Image (cartoon, rainbow, N blue to C red):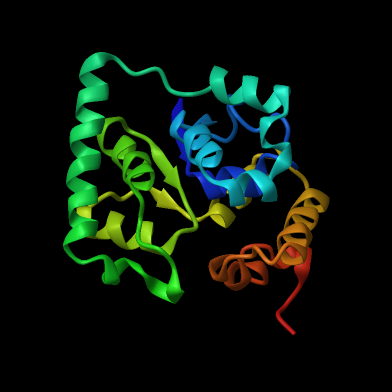
Length: 197
């Protein structure tokens, strides 16, 4: 099995519409989606996120997150903390290099998500371009955009064309469609959306 760790925004973009989202193997590499418990902490610390995503604390979703949060040994916890500290140090040295499109630089939670991909063989999913830049700087290779994950889920028939359309529509309506998703819409999902107008 290949763990696929979602950052907070990737989780929030998909969890409401794809159920169950976590813990279900799919594809030839038996990808299994998971989230760190840090996702819960990040959402609960943010009044904006709690207000925007009131469904986050639904019992079914909370149980799913807790059940499919990776279990770490003490050595792994220590390695994760050390790797996250190094990554966060890189961010703090020059935060502006990670602030594309007027975004905030990667947070400590973002660094922990990326660090997980260093301490275990895993894929990290984020639409945060700052996190992609940090991953590139740190040599972390298995980092996908959310639309990459969506395409793999579609190819594995875990989701269907209608659900892809629904997800894109919801993200557009909520003004939460990342630029990378816009670029992928008429390329990765050509059969669903057709050629770009």
